[in-house]
Length: 269
Image (cartoon, rainbow, N blue to C red; front, side, top):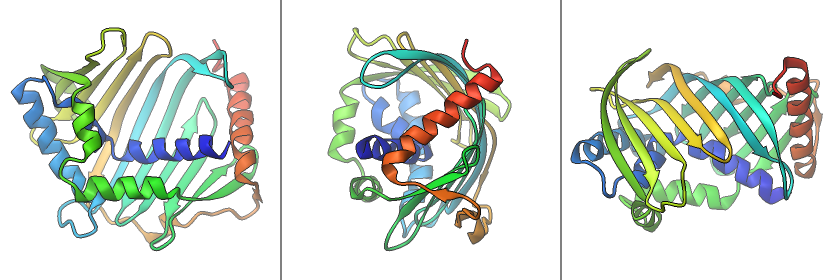
């Protein structure tokens, strides 16, 4: 159970580093133009991971997540799920992260903060509960590795497993964006990812994930502000009136909230 929660936290952090991860998995066997675009994006956003970086200091964004498909449940089996969520994201150096999630799967807040000791607080308003989790050292080490090394070994390995294709410019709500498609070299893997990178600014403004087994999800940026002033209070969790639960209870509490929201809002097809 603890490992499941740690994996969840890893996913949250990787999501914040979307641009870095996109570049990590997609450069080999790609068009030169696609490579150049992603390299510009990587150079811009990797600064956020570096304590001594002088470019990107903070991010304030709002995104929408829509889609549906099959979600794994337990060790075997799955259930249908429709997703229609909004997410507020605030990131500030050196290790501050705020995610505010609302929508068909319920509301939740995740706050990562701390300097010497980094902790994560997950707040579930629907059930009035919260949990505090020490950030796994492996996550911190991986973040530091990506910020200090130009191209870690994991990157080199990932480059061998993906193909990236440039598909031209497309209009988005944020402006004209370069469309870049990603698929696995392994032909038995049928899923694909499409990334939209804003022309001239090199900001990610959309991600489409299609998997024949689990379904399709579209992530669209509604707002993206860089180097904006974020008050320190944003990264101070407000747990007044909430009951603290242990890490072992957290996954169950999350599933209860998700199931309740789906039954109330019709999230189950």
